Amino acid sequence: MRTESSELSMAKTTLTDETSWRLRLLLNGLTTTQGKKLDGQLFVIEGKFVEEEGYEPPQGSFKPAKLAEDEGMSFELSNSYWKLSEDPNDPKDGLWVWGLFKEPLYPFMLLQIETKELKLPSSESDDNSKDSIPPLKLFAQISHIRDKDSGVELKTANLNVRVLERVQLPGASVDLYEEEKVGQISFQPL
View 1 (tube, helix red, strand yellow):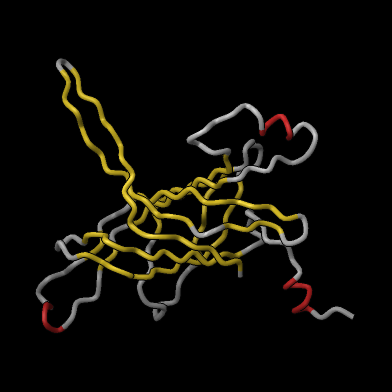
View 2: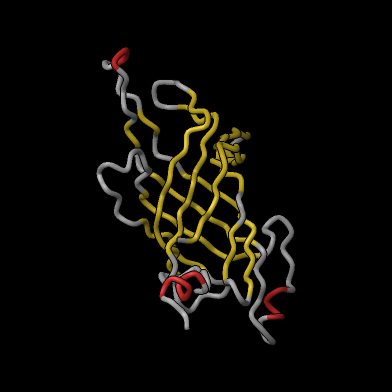
């Protein structure tokens, strides 16, 4: 006879609102508005991936759950977007063909998270300064595996911000983006 807890542990993890996820963002080398470097600062966001129907490859947004007042520091998201993908650095015309015969095995999830400014708690020694983490646009390319028995598995990945560099050319300017690593993101289904 199955118990309710064994049924829950046997449930497949999904990228739908059926599965809650805990995202752990470990930030290193990120500069605050007062010029301080954050090293090894952990932020946790819980919520659900919500798939938009009718898109191939699958895509959607991450909807955070409401946090209790006493849960400490956590980012408030202003926007999020995810999309399953082939390797974006080596695009091929092959994986979608497999979708004609069975579900395609997209090996990557491309995740973009936009945060609102986060006020940092001040210590007694510097109560005059109101330090914060500025709004961020974070990017990650995550290894994505779908197991027929356990469901979706998302691996730990680098977390990056895009640094804009404007190059002035004669008569025009070009915006170039370079990704700079600011930490890691890991995933735990709940």
